[in-house]
Length: 637
Image (cartoon, rainbow, N blue to C red; front, side):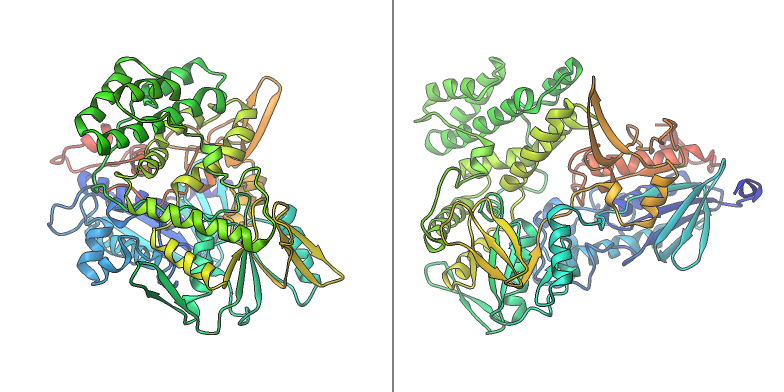
């Protein structure tokens, strides 16, 4: 390959592999900077995706409108600046909510939670805006193909595509999103069993939009493993997606009218509880929470100290912050806003660092009882409970779901518990400061943070819109959907030619099934990624998993080992691949919560900050000539 170094490239060539939100954010920032710089040289950008260029797989515009986002549209923008109401351009364009209201007439129908297909349309709108705005010297190539291999040379990178095309580039950004992984453990056992047992079907985990549900017959028993966001998508597709209807009752509840095409749905998970729903939004699009206890400053000081254990050093601070918000909300509703503000001031002045400390002050200000916030208990509502039958369990579950819905209707400002749950979402940047790049002790990183907190925090803070709860209640009432119970187990039976789903905490909960769907999101692990590109990068030593190591304890995370911003891969030999950048989900576990799919309209969060850092580094590395009449601040800031 060394002769490639002698091939002259007459332009600066940049490849972006993956055109979902992360790849699009890099493109938008590249375009914005190129416009500012007024580049003289020819620049070619290759936007490559093996699905839909501009949306990726997850945000395909062809998917069902029943599949919804779990972030309200007004909090989302794919432009890196507020819209000034002029012609949209990179750096200034409508937020997702503004676009939705401008180009569709059903904004109010979804309580602000858009179909994912709409966000795909919005991303295509952003892409067309970028294309229209590019300087004359910049060309964008949209390529629908897979990148099968990337070969490094001293000067360039050669990309080999599934359509037999080869592209020589100066810099490559890898933003490939959710992977398809080789199956292992229980998933592999179920897949192998289904392959060898003709009546049985196992549908692997992933996006519901890509699952083939057509073979599921009316009244057939279908098991769903996991009750997160994918569960709600499946619930919708297997009911209203098959012609059923939800009808509003006078008491505010929904009644489900079956079409007769629905299967009988059985679901289970570790907690036995579907994700609680999000509180009714009461916050403006530019809302920002300022922590009093769980602060960036405190996190920095602890990070500098080192030897951090999540449950000892981090979780108590987060739970104290949640306790404060809960107490503030109660005081504001029962006393006054002034009293609530005074509590916060006292907490800051007294440098409170524990929930007990918050409670001591809150009781003095008039909170009627000590507030107990335990994330793990809240995420495990049936802990140590047993039930005599699956019917009795579902009665109890129904009452909890109903209570949760009523609490959600109080809103994410006026419900003390929903406001407290929002603290988890609002302080993710603080959590990252503790966790990213091996901030935690390896044992704590694996067992305390990823195995426990990661799922518990998602359970409490990442739920669907509240109307999903009404739908769930109606389906449980109609006995179309049954939850088998907590600590759900799966076992295969060759004799009975079926898969059994049951809960050890619910008597007589054994259900025989011929169809089982994995509704869990596959975890990031590059060693199991089926992508030819990923495997070739591993084979060539360009990609290696990040290993969190302290003394003689090691935890191999599965995420790509990268530098700090702008996130170059660190090769197996310890050298840095400076012409490559890796962003988003492939780096999950090296960094935390990389599945975020957007930035905020009014403020750059890490999503846009990361994209801009990569755009800056790419352009700064190319020694580009700029129009001397232009201010070159953008390259040298």
